[in-house]
Amino acid sequence: MLDPFDIFKMEQNGTVRWVRAINDIQRAKTYVNKVLATAACADYIILNQRTGERIIIQAATKRRDIRVAAPSLAVSSRN
Image (cartoon, rainbow, N blue to C red):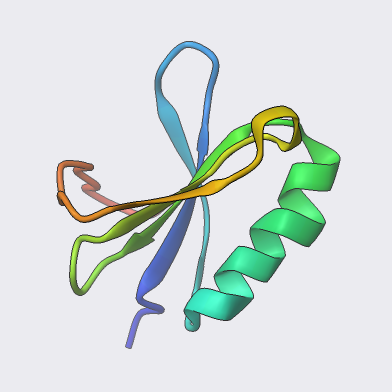
């Protein structure tokens, strides 16, 4: 079974890059906040593959979490 929470980095050119999948939402948030955000100041999306809900974690300079219910982020495969 695949982990249900995918983490994406939002690139400056408007595209998103898949980072990894994690099995728990709290672990995904912790991974973004403690590992990714400290390494690269960027915005990140956590996508729940089961419900389509997205959580956007913004860069430290404008930090806040935004929940987005619309499943408009299309993901064809995990690379």
